[in-house]
Length: 85
Image 1 (cartoon, rainbow, N blue to C red):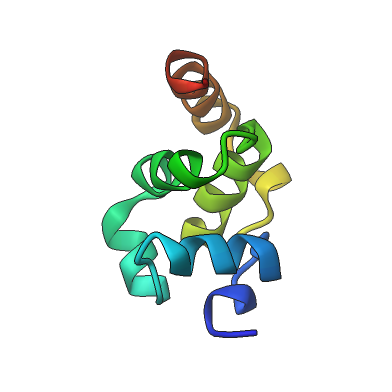
Image 2 (tube, one colour):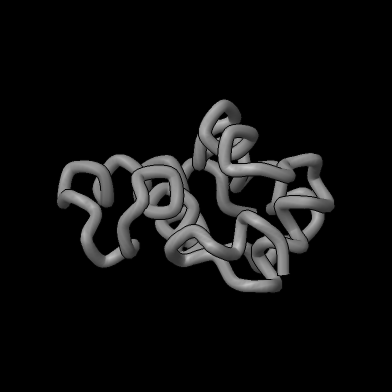
């Protein structure tokens, strides 16, 4: 496992997907943002779900996805509905 899997919510599979789409470090993830990172993952894995999007945002904020604010969750769910395949 690399550096990304040390972040909250990021396991080996998600880390491998992030690496596959060119996101190698925490700084890469923060600069790309959860939404764009999720869209990139969705291009290689159509099963990428809302939980993955929430997990990415939580990783960026340094918290578990369950600890995201209701406003953030709501915004991400709206984004997910617009972009899911």
